[in-house]
Structure formats: structure tokens, C-alpha cells
Figure 1: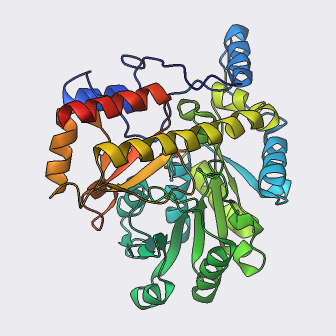
Figure 2 (figure 1 turned 180 degrees about the vertical axis):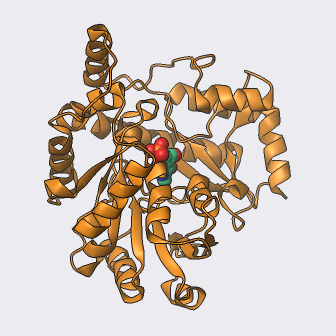
Length: 385
Ligand SMILES: Cc1ncc(COP(=O)(O)O)c(C=O)c1O
């Protein structure tokens, strides 16, 4: 069993989640629950592989490992039940870089990109920074579930709408799109000849009772419009090693993305990303299985405790990820009041306004941490109250 209960102090380790946020807040006293990065060690198999790379001692240019595609094919086959053709796989350094290159490859300045709100901000930024407009339809809540309103979206697009960015499972709402929803999105893109960039980086975090379906499993013409991005980074908490990959079934789209990757000279992986790819998908499935049940336990803990200490907070139904999407509108009169309360408690997370204009007074709380950290969060809330 992996010991997810181990508390590791990450302060002063140059962690973006901890140190960048502490520096911005001017104090090391906060519990950081913002950035989607977990406070767990990676699987031992990955650590051993990285040690081997360090002990080898030469850190020259890297050519992709011979088993790079093998691991991805095995993972998608075993975990998601879908066959991926070897030639459709393309190395990419980071998912957000791939999203930016996709915008460059398949649209022009002045064109528009669809990205549902609430959204992971860097995916909004890749369009805006490239001079594109972003159409941001808010997800709508129906029977406690966030859904897309594709009928409304029909009225928001025009001939300059070239790309949809779909985050699946969705960050921050944690939705895992159903087969039917994926088919409807696919149909929408096919009818309007819109390239579909699907970000499946959270696909391995699935709450018990739910099932993730990859867009790669949706049959039909959508496969010719699909640029799918994924990475082992969230799954094994190895974001700092910077490795990701694309699955692009259509040869022309694949060539266009490869040209973009070449344009920014992103053709070689770093030593550590390359090393971990040799074992992550081959040997570490047990890790994410155990982690998923630990996260389910963390969610249960938070629900029970929040009912007691912040009874008016509504933790939205979690389907995947290691995030809680919480509506504090009944608990606090404004987002400023919410943030001021949590500042007093020395707890930091990302407020709803971080994820677009429609979800003020919400919070995305990262529960990818030991239960003892969550207990400390509850203690601090009680003290602040
Ligand atoms: C939906 C989503 N996509 C992409 C990323 C970042 O991926 P990368 O570091 O590979 O750019 C994150 C990180 O939080 C994320 O939540």
C-alpha cells in the first residue's frame, strides 16, 4: 500500500503550489490548496527510474524512449478500453503548450475558440495571447450536474469559430462527460467543421461509481477533427518532469501539429520526463487505483466536516479529479468576504473568479493531500470561526 498519509513539508522546495503562493501572500503560514498539484510522492518505480537517470550522470540531448508509444497504447487499452494507433501518437512537452500550438495551427488572429466557463485559465490565455477571441458559454446546472448547452452555443458561433477546447474530465467542475454528451459534442464539431482539442489530463482520477470515456473512443468523423492531449503528470504527480503527448488520428492534422512543434523547437523530451515514461504506464497502475480511493475518502471527510463547520457551503457533486468545487454563496455574502475569512484561517485556494466571470463566491479546493492536512484545515476553520 502507498502511504498517502505521509505529511511532507514542501515549503522552500521551490514548489509552485506552496512557495509561489506563499511568496505572493507574504507568509509561509498558509496551507496551500490552490494549484492542481498533490502533496504525495510519486510511485517508487518512477523514483527508482529517475535515480537511475541521475546516477548515469550524463544529461545530454534525449531521443524518445523506444517504449514511449507502447506505454500509452497499453494504458488507453487497459484503463479506457480504446485502441490507439501507434502512428497517431506525438510527443509534446506540456498540454498547455500543445493547446497553444493547436490554436496557432488551426485558426488565425480574429477567429474564435470555444471554451466552457468555468475554465482552467491557461487554456483561455492560449487563445487570447494568440490574438483569438474566446467564446465562453457557462456550463449550466441541471439536477445538480453541470452540462453544456449546445443549442445555445449554436447561436454564439459563426464562420470564424474554428476550435473547441474541451477539458475531459472537466476542471474545475470535476464533471466526467458521458458517452452521450461526448457524442453530442462530437456531432456539434463535425457539423460546424470545428477542430476539437480535448485535454484528458485528469482522466485517471475517477470517483468510485463513475466511468471515464475518452474522446478517442467516440467513433465516426470526429476522429478526423481530433487533437487529444494527455500526460502522466497529474496521475503520478510528476508535473515538474514536463512530459505529455498527443493522439491525433488524422495524418494531415498530425502533420500540422508536428510542424508547430518543430516551429518552437519542441522535439526533444527532457531526461526525467523521458525516464518516467518508461515505467509510469507500464508499472504504476496500482498507484492511481489506491490514490483514487484515498481521494474518495478525503472527499467524504471534507463533506462530513464542512456540514459541521460551514453548513451553508455546497460542495458540488464530484465525479473525477482531486478537486472540490464549492459554492459559498449561502455562506459568505461576497467572494471578498469568503477570501478574507480563509486568509484569517491561513488557508489558501483558488476563488471562482479565477475560473472566469460566471462563478463568483465559488472555490476550487485541492484535496490531493494527506488527511492530516485536511484535519488541520478544519481545525483552522473552527478557530477562525
Ligand atoms: C485541465 C488542465 N490542463 C492542463 C494542465 C497543465 O498541463 P501541463 O502542465 O502539461 O501544461 C492542467 C494543470 O492544472 C489542467 O488542470
